[in-house]
Image 1 (cartoon, rainbow, N blue to C red):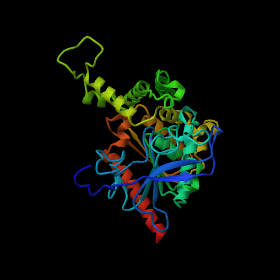
Image 2: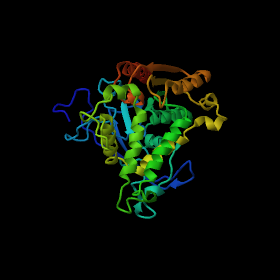
Image 3: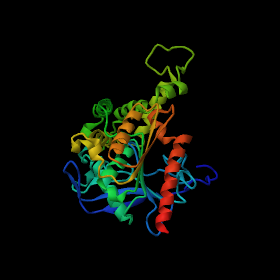
Image 4: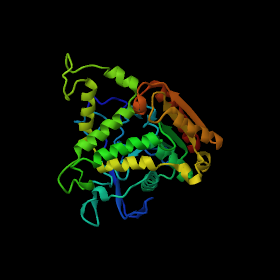
Length: 385
C-alpha cells in the first residue's frame, strides 16, 4: 500500500459474510440448502436506501473491488480506478456493494467450501450455477442489506451479463444498468475457447476428476494453461505487439524449447501467478456460466422480446480492439433495447487494450461512466427532496 492512502481511495476495507439458510433452487435443479456470500461495501447507504450500486464481477474477479485489506497490500481492489471519493462511482454519493459470486473461490460458497452433507470439500461435486442463479442470490443479498432497489447495477464482461439479467428478472429492483464490454450470449468461438480451457484443466494428471484436494494435489499445469489461453484472448494484437514485440530474452535464438521471447515469459508468469489465487473447479464453473447465458433462448431467440420486461435506463460501453466481446456484440444489445423502446446510451471507446480495457481508467470511458452516474445521483436527490 502507498505510504499515504490517496484521498480518492476508500482506504482500508473489511469483507463481510452473509449467511443464508433459505434453500436456493438452481437452474440445473440442484438445491443449495445453505450458503454464504462474501461482500464488501464502500460509502454510506442513505436514509431512504436509494443510493445503492451493485458491482458484478467478471470471470476471475471477486468481492474486493476497491481499497486495501491491510497496510501490507501491494495493490488495491480490481476496480479501484473507478470506485472511490470523487471517482466515477463516487462513494461520497453512492453506497457500493460488490460480492464474490456463488461458486467462487474467494470466500463465498463454492467448490472449495465444505459440503454439509459429507463434511468434505465440495470439489467437482459443487453444482453448476448460472447467471440467473447469481442474480437470484444477489437479490437475496440486497434483501439482507435492506436494499429494495439498486440505483444502478454495473458490470463488465461476464459482469455485464449479470446486469442484463437483473434488468429482465427484477425490472422493479434496478433503476439503471451499466453494461461494459459484454454480449447477449457467447459466440461459438468463445464457447470453443472455454472448452479448450476446461480440457486443459481436466487433462492435467493431478486433476483427479475434480477431487484434487482430497488427493492432496493441484492441477496447476492445466489451470495455468487455461489462464494463458484466456489472457491472450483478453488482449489485443496491437497491445501485445507494443508491449512485447519480438523482444528476446537473449541476444540470439537458443534453438531449444526454453523461453526465447519476452511474451513467452510473461504468459508463463501470468499462468503460474493465477494458480496461486484461483481454484480450477471454480474456473470450470465460471466458464460454464458464460456458455449458458442466453436470455433470448426463452423468447425464440428474439432479444427484443427478451428485454421487454426491462424498465431501467441503460448505458452500454464497448472497446474498438476487443475481439472477444466486440463492439458488434454490444450493439446487438443496443439495437434490441432501442427496438423495445428502452432508454439507452452507447459509447464505443477507442482503445488498444483489447477486452481488458474495461478494467482501465481510459479517460473517455471514465467520462461516459461519470456522466451517466451524475444523472443517476441527480435523480436520487430529486426523488429524496
